[in-house]
Image (cartoon, rainbow, N blue to C red; front, side, top):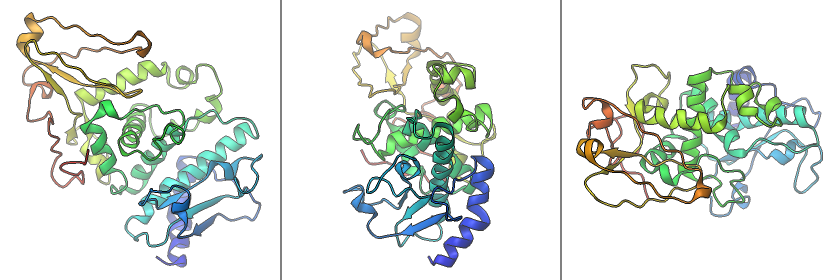
Length: 328
């Protein structure tokens, strides 16, 4: 990885693609260029994050920022030694953040930026995949989410404060959600989000539905249609693409099942036909949880009732880049 290679990659491919899809990147420091700072000290920002390869700081784009908390500069921080194969996806992700923060800077200036980081990260992962087709930065995260969706909250207001910064499963959830938004509303869905973020009902104003309604539609879509295995490959999201679904817990007989939902997450259960016909299902949970309960009916031949398509042990399609058994 040489400086000349990075410059050519950014100028000839990545930056034009990001600005066309997301928006223009601000020249925060007025030097008429975007800075890529290559440094071996990235891990000082997040001790223990041994795989940290690049990042962009929102504080660098905020007009009120002051050193050392802000460099007040449009800069991407990159670790040395990133391979040429993985560099396009990593830089595409970070340049998406540059465009996001530029839009927020223009919209809100020195005021509070109301967009949550989970949505920013999910959108960056979606753009990274759509624009480069590279899967290495995303595949393991999606696999973790599909294996244990109930442990992988989608909406995390402040991931760093919650101790969930860069948590693989939640990153997989945000990526899957934003890719679904792209399928559902088209690739331009992000463009109006910054302007609507400060409204009381931004989700309904932009998407025509409250977040809770979109969340239900997405979680049902995951069960019925699954996630495109082709999200790990160049190209994309056609109806004929192989699909993988989140893990379902089978409900059989009179067994009692206790499961913990972490934040804004979903657990999936598959009712045995006999239980569905004659059994009684009782759900108990705290009133503060605001649980959503959805029943999805399908014929026996449907994937919902086919154990070969359910993944109790999670076996993704071959050659799709997903680990066969993600770590706990």
